[in-house]
Length: 428
Image 1 (cartoon, rainbow, N blue to C red):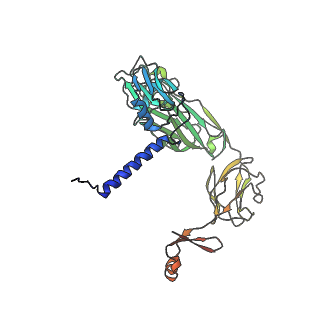
Image 2 (cartoon, helix red, strand yellow; image 1 turned 180 degrees about the horizontal axis):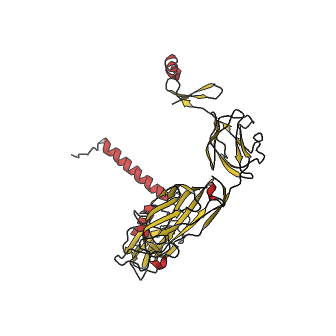
Image 3 (cartoon, rainbow, N blue to C red; image 1 turned 90 degrees about the horizontal axis):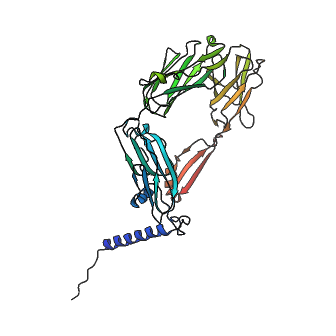
């Protein structure tokens, strides 16, 4: 007697699903979406990215031995870009990765086969050599060095710090060459370590005592900064690796005592910087001319809609002048007693109700030297909002229970500024 085995329905279903999945996978590799342009061997090739490309090169035998790397590309893979780089380890250790300094690099596109590549290694300190996909990486990430999806192979040595010393310099610039009394502007400081060793305990100061300036809003890409006694900037930047830089910005505001110019410089220092490298720790002097002329000029701003109708309730700020300014029922605001021939940066920060701020919310506006508040120095235009709100229909229950045709329908309400409602329904 022959006994036949009956497979449960779920086993058959699983088998069918597995077979379909296999067919889909094979179709994906054979489809035009997976096949790139014809490779160097005249055959169709496959393009991979990310970790799939990294793994394919690893499995093909790509590796690193000190200053020599082997780039192995499978026959079925399209040509790929690969970089082989060496890095100096100033501290003698691979971490932190961001302090490594690029020493040598070779980047090329490799086709199927095996290629040997050589680079130069530092001979005065520890090093790391990395083989990875894509273009050269000059600055490594502190958390993982190279992106994990790109690194193919690597070698490194530790324990021998690089010879040399830190050498920190500072550059200073101003956002304006000339300002009016009370008009704010921004200073930018850039600290760089041009030495070949990490600079420890880097500090920056900028004393604007003579002539006095009012400083505020310090920002730094590393460490922290503060304002002392309104006119002294002090920053603690921590450690700055070789070849690295830190940018600091802060706002300065002139006073009548600042006339006729603001002239100052910034200073940087590092705890482990030798005396012979401290000659460039001061920035160049930066001069900003302060115009102290007084006058009766007027700044008159007009606010309208596209049809020229006057708009009240728009709110503006003027750089260098405290407070906010709101357009009146004539669609204007006017500031008098400003210096003749002066130009001010005017920005709309809030449009009137029912309108949106225009595409040019900021304009450079020249004053009217005659002090005339009737003629506009500048005109700002606002467009109407197209729609106020979207909200569920409050009477949905009435529609649902009073007409069976509304069952299962979605809805919302549009209201325009004339007070008209439009009710929209759709099948879900």
